[in-house]
Length: 473
Image: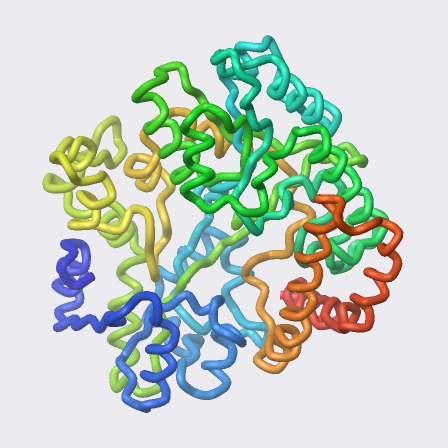
């Protein structure tokens, strides 16, 4: 990060010698952070995805590793102004007790955080004269057509109406039954619930998926596909629909497939409606308002100056610098908007737009700044189907999802994990058996009792408590 032009200018503006320490190995970064903290030799600032740590950032504030920013806010007027500008973001920044723990990556635009969902070969729909499916029955009928009417035109019955990568367990269709694979908000009770424990809805889900599997509407290898196998099926012309990201799925599949088939079109679509008429979004980060954050440590000797330095990134000038880089070098103003230069949009052979852009800025990732969707879209979304996918996914209802910025305390996290890990293993095993038909539905009542014996109700209770606190913010 110290080699990026945006941070060179950032340091110059603050008149500091800004030194960066990076984990030597990204795969063990969390362990290295723990070792750093245990050494009691802390840097002035730690940039981290705190929500991914057990106990979240609350644990590190409580243990006096991270310094509360409340008394430093006079030195951070731009951060305060950004919170005032985006009140939906601001309300998830403080901890339950009102502590402001970090300068966060702010994501006010849901287009930036809605990047995964159901994708479908819409050119197959056009070939067969079909409309985009809306209801669960529509999805079933479209999949039957994909199976029987040779949309790939090779004269063989080799189409896989639905395919996916292993461990997904057809959970993309759970929202059509009003549940999710993990914790969610039960729309009938308004309370936290666990999808595989909602007996009526979960039973209907696995029964329906078993029927679709037996009809040949689901890839027989759905439980064993790795990413390479899934890509081969989607790019090779046999996969009709799957769950995928807008970049690695819609973008990469399209670019690879159009080498041989210029008509290939895959696009994100809304999932099937639930019985209440709502189309619920599959799990993703659409509700996420804050990402990683820059936390000032308690060993920082001049926190006021550090706060002022980080605050610059939230000013209009700082936002443009961190998202777009240096005017005249990485971007120019076109029709009043920052636009990346041609050397970034059409980089030299062997280099991607992302690789070209990060020499100057951080248009896709970020800590301690307001993320700009237009910057990301210019760099990451090279075909119109990607933006169209996001718009289609955004038509879905987010009411089932629990806010991803909600956190458990350290004690809650430990207890929850000890229960959840055992339950998840059992649930995944039984879900697969019910879908494949290797387990009789006659055992379903016992399955529910087993979950109760494993502590599912306590698991829900823990999450409900954290959710209630979060709502009170």
